[in-house]
Each structure stands twice: as structure tokens, then as C-alpha cells.
Length: 130
Image 1 (cartoon, rainbow, N blue to C red):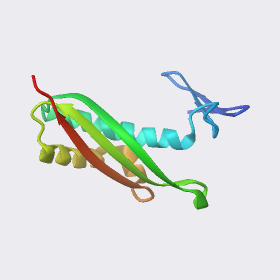
Image 2: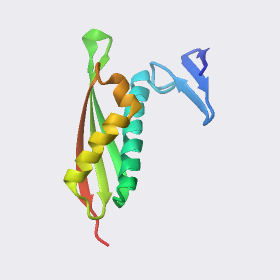
Image 3: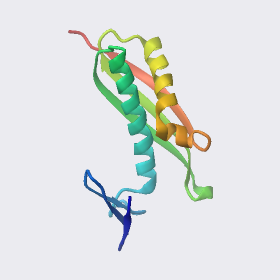
Image 4: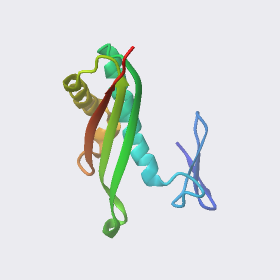
């Protein structure tokens, strides 16, 4: 991956498209936003794959991420809380949490930061009827 200097940040030309990174969100994605999105996106993708393998019928998976940053340490990310809202059929909360634990162990982004950023996870399940 190559990044190129722009007036207000950096640009990367990737297979999917151009990514612009800037400390000012008027000019691009802020670095902390990309980190949180990477962690949530990786975790959600792995979780979804596990649910599919378990034949858990879901209609939707929404992840809400809350971030705690430390302004005295260069706005370091201290904690990320992920709330997984799972909408589906015949949902077993215990099974969902077990699958989330497995996804945590298999998500490269979570594993990369687990010793420096506290990652909290919670599930809200919404049972749909047919």
C-alpha cells in the first residue's frame, strides 16, 4: 500500500477505490475512524461467517461502536465498545455469545490491538417472526 501526500492529508489508491485520510474530517477519514471501522468491520465479518456456518438465520447485523479516547495521551484510543444488534429467527442468546467469542479469537484486527485497546462486546438480539 502506498500513501501519497495531499494538501490536507494522505491518499491511497486501492483496488476498491481511493481512500483519503486526514486529521480533519472535512478532507477525509480520520485515522481513529478507520481503526474503529477496521476492528468493527473485521469482527462483524467473522461473526457473520460463523453464524452462517452455524446455520443461524439472520436478516441483519448492525454494529454500533463507541470510542473512549485519552486526550492527555495524544487522543489515544483506550476502549472500543461494540454493540452487535442481531435481527433474525430462532436466536439463542447463549449460542450468539459463544459465536462472538470465537469470532474475537479469529479477527485479525481485534487480535492486533487486544493488548493495547480494551475491546468490549455486547449483543442485542431482535427476534423476528415469519
